Structures are given as C-alpha cells and as structure tokens.
Amino acid sequence: MTVPAPRRTLLRAAAWAAPVAALSTAAPALAISPTTPIDVTYNQESCKQTGDFGPDGKKRYRLVFDVENQTNQPLEYRVVSIVVEPNSDTPITFFDITTTWAGTLEPGESATVREVSDASGDLGNGTAKVDIEVRFTDGSTETVTTFVQVESFPPCQD
Image (cartoon, rainbow, N blue to C red; front, top):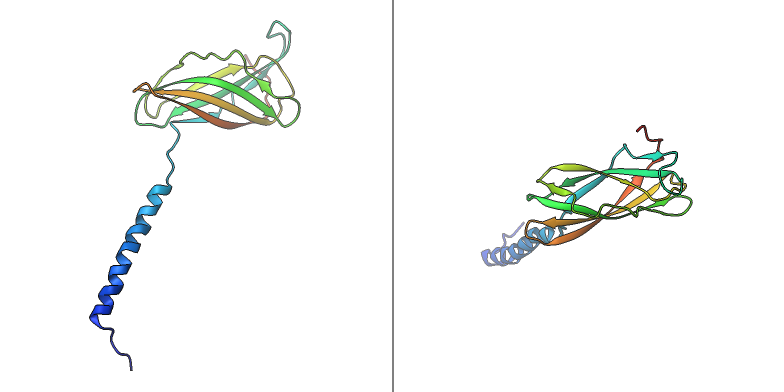
C-alpha cells in the first residue's frame, strides 16, 4: 500500500526545484555569442589575369567577394589585408588594396569587393584570409577576420 507524501515534503521539493528551473533557462542566454557585423562570402567572379598586368610582366589574380551588413544600423567598411595561402607554393599577398572607406552599407545591404594581387604564384586551391575593418555610426571600429575557401581560378574574361 502506498502512503501519500505529507504536504510539507511536497512544498520543500517544489521550493528546491524552482531555482534549478530558473537557472537552467538563464544559462543558454549566457552561452550565445554575438554575431559578426558583416558576412564575407567568396564570389565566383574571381579569376586569373593572364598576360602583362604589371610592371614585372607577371600574371595577377583577382579575388572577388561579397560583404553583407548583418547589423540593424548603417556601417562603413574597408579591406585592411588579404593573404591567400595556397595548398602548394608560397602565400600571395594583395599589397595595393584600396584602404579608404569603401562606402556605407545599410542593414541587410551587400557590396561586391574586387582586389587584384601584386604577384602571381601557384594559387590553385587554398584559403584566403581577409581582414575588413568596420566603422559604426557612433565612430567605433571593429576588425573582422574571415577565411574564404578559394577554388582554382579560371582565366578572366575581361
């Protein structure tokens, strides 16, 4: 035969369970990390410029990527650096990057960025490390580093 639990025991158990439930619902909110203000994605327009595209007569590589504002406020952006680490050969650095503020992106708006390397190499497949500085309407800045997988570049059509 089952004996019912006294009311005092039930109240004590409920009192202990309530704080545990409150803590378990608050913990996930602390674990959420802030999102980056921009999203950077590789654009398939990236290509290899063959022929004489510089004073040294070497081929150049055009890296094209899209930058999207993921905030709820307008922001300015500028590319600070690009380095491509190919799966073989030596890294390729993009030296003549236009480091002026590229313009303002409204919330949800995106822009296409095109940069050309200074020297060629065996780019093939690899990873591009792109550093972009973002300036918010209050004047504060943040540097966003992103890694974009680079596929073999086809010859440029223009």
